[in-house]
Image 1: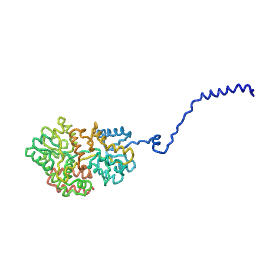
Image 2: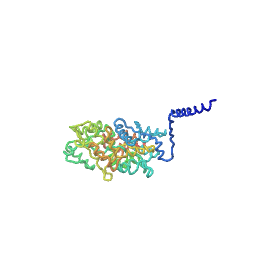
Image 3: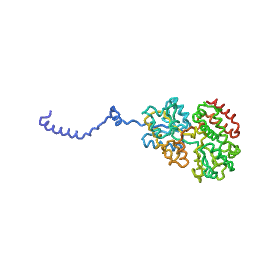
Length: 452
């Protein structure tokens, strides 16, 4: 046992050693445990909510997809919300299977209003107007950017489901200003004016019209523009969508009689019957624009400006060739615009999806798309400046945005057996036998009876 004297000597040494050991220990790590505190402010500060990508499905590829991706990239840059783009050849078919499996995309872009209405009535898509004050797309934002014609187009049974994001006009009638000037006429406002111009060309030894009837859909476009101007938008829907109006109805007979005033192969159509039926829609336009024209006027959609620029680079659209609006036939219905477009519909309501739809509805997004390096579109948004478009596209955009009434291409609305095969065959037969209207309409009604 150590002596007291030894202990008294060791104690200061031990204390000093302990102090040295203590000083040599590393500083303890401080572990901070995150504790969720009730209340949105604290929770947001400690646990940010996960941002889910918005999934969008469409059938666009190539330049069309490239143009849309400019919009999608701008959305992500603006909001920080990522996206997933899913391309599908026939997206409506894919989406039906996805609905059945419980995993539809957030947003579908469809060019078929009938599909939109079908999904709406099934409860598969959500109304964008929703509950007042809690809408996916506030009505004020919609009205600020779109005319009533486009709001009506996206409405099903009194609720708004489809936001039209791009559109085109098929109510554009192409002519050459210099030719009209030489004939001493102005672009026609009415059907009577158009017929008078055609008669003037015939009297001058020139052919008024070129029609590319080898492509049967060009003839359906003629009929659709005539019919909606005679019967109105409601009967137009009843003929093509619901078949409440039969093909033998007096309104259809009248429309065909008006079309008969154009279809006079011997004097008014370039190439006569044979030339009309053997010429495709691009070549039919070319024969009007070439140096030795075979005809002076050509009816088809605004998209023809692209073929004019491609095939006749020395001509200036808006100067050497231009279009006037398909003329009014009856004052009651004026000049409705027949065309096509794509509507955005929503399957899932999330904050990210709301941000996306509101962005799509804005003039900002629409202007990006209208000026895309590739795949630029005509926007129905009335706040997109017409100055962003080339001259002819600007005229088409004005027609689209200012339309008092807009109807989709009827042959696309109808069952394919009617709007495709039957109408193509029937109207091509009409070119060859323009006085055989009764048999032609009876054939169409027979096919329609089996198809709806």
